[in-house]
Length: 195
Image 1 (spheres, helix red, strand yellow):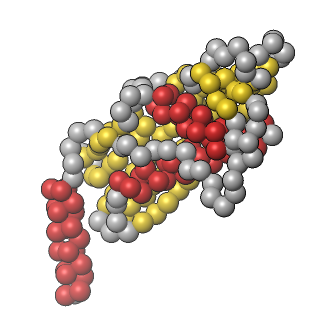
Image 2 (tube, rainbow, N blue to C red):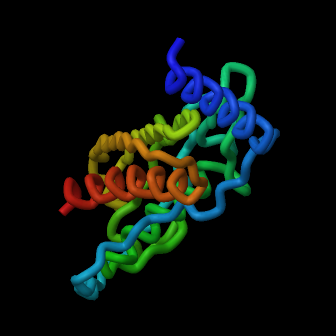
């Protein structure tokens, strides 16, 4: 073994031990998963009123978990939100509609032109952090039902987004921004399909 190979091996082993020692144990609370309002254009005010019914979480598993961070084969963290993922995604849907200039109310709303509801099929981020390499993969898949309140047939819109990002250093802010971008992309698909 050459001297440079030995130095690389020792440095890699040291970084692995250091990373494992610094790793947070237990679930990690993510607080900044939000709809990212597009910049540069002001929403056109609309007289439309849309009632939003809470989205149903059909992912299975924990209602507050939205990801997993893997540090090594035996060190993992669950990534969770305060409350439920369904509340988080429903709130982001309302924010996306309001950013379009639409008045949003909780369902049932008698003066609403449309009623939105649906399912969260996927809202998850997998993170693998190793010394000098962090990989993030966020996936969001929504199935939203849009109905005229008076009783016309409902229309179903599917939206999905997957975002993969590699970085040298792990950070929780990158976890949150990656999942926020995937959620924003899926919600923007819904708004584009509805227009």
